[in-house]
Length: 258
Image (cartoon, rainbow, N blue to C red; front, side, top):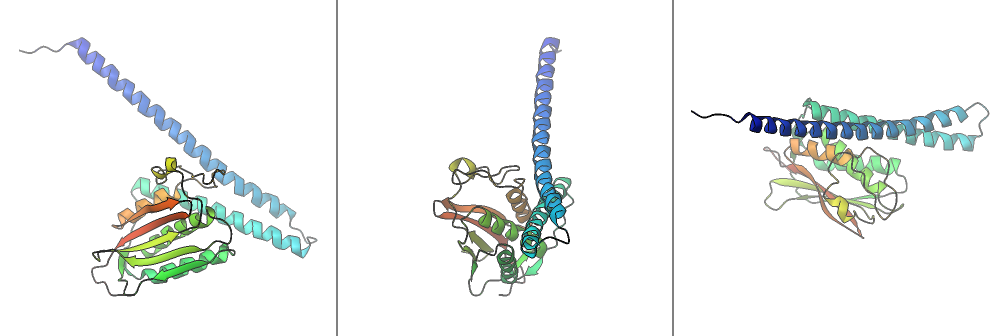
């Protein structure tokens, strides 16, 4: 007959309770950091919108009116981006994200996203290079567009004005995946961030400057969505000459070229 040492059991129980308290404290701290970031990123564009909207009246000179409206559009876009990131995050955490995969042509989506990018970043050219015979991929076109928009916005955000963004589509050796790479001409990602850029709430400071605006959810959400489609988002290279991110998606079973 074996006997149980009550002191040992109590010690183990105290240790487990201590671990639970530590985990709960870390969770509370993470929630505080998250919601502080959320309120900051929502408050900043809202204040700008209210301020510039108040300046618009029937007597506003046309030149000033154009300036104010440009800023209002920019801040509205920023606010929409934050809300969209939060929505995507909630969908992922709740397990309610729906992926509607179909055989799609990546070239069409890349050209559309590139054109949109040149519209809102008027000082940029997005140069595309699409390999011949690229097959269709199995993916959700709406989600793919979201991912590519995120990668292009990051490329614009972290590279000097008037420098081009290069987007290319190629077939992975072996022919099972199609790759979409987005290359910028920025100063690169510091080594201390390279392992963390796909984590939540990580905002990169490049070239010694301040971290750019945003919740630090874009790359995290993009990678999670890509993986749910059977692909991935990865940092391929980063250095003083720029960074290259790559979206990988599986070739569709009924793949034809497009």
